[in-house]
Image (cartoon, rainbow, N blue to C red; front, side, top):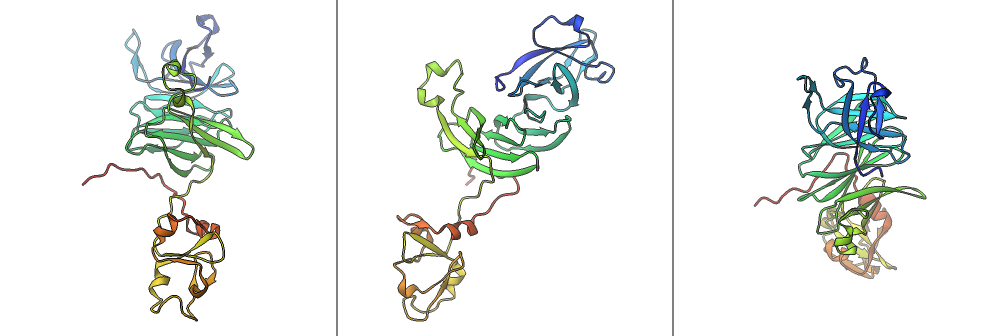
Length: 312
């Protein structure tokens, strides 16, 4: 499976193969990364099994005293097609198109690579980052963080855009996540423990079930509102900006007073079913916010945001 690492033997000549998992490299093209004619590295496989990564978790030295640098090899059809020297990495997961998402051994830096092996984006986290995954088509990547952030961060790897943060609804941290293809794209499934883990039989069965399903799409910030809410002829309430409320000096329920809502409606409070002078009361009520008001108020982050430890 693509989320379980194994080891791969990289060789300069097929005559040197001693293991089932192997790939060929051109020593003349990559002399620094392959100072000798064999090298054994950790590996992950793409979902369609055509691509593999091979990477060094730490710098090493051969018996002849030659340094073997850290980096990531991309393998296609049992041949190394690119080598990128980079920081020591703990995971490097390939997509079916050869794109790769990798995380450093320090658990703070995540790097995205295009199918040529070129690093195209990197991001550093303040909370430790753990599980990472990439969609089979290479279009999206997801990173899970530990406390205090404890969330999933989603990226559009084609556009090199941050799509947002979804807080983990569980009180534990996410141990595993994977993309699932659905009718309109992908969702990210999150787990407390990998369903196929050797520990699965020893824990509460609920811990192997999906915690959350996150659509691979822009994630809005939670609504942070002030102002008021007003219910008119229905089961929804409309948002009134704080500035609008401050400009009304008289009693709301008198003829001639009108309020502009965030969705563009003009409402007479005189005919309102209910008025919430504190918008938080409206949010906690039985009524739903008007969908047009909501869409106009949502914001979408363009840069990574994390929850920080509260400091008194």
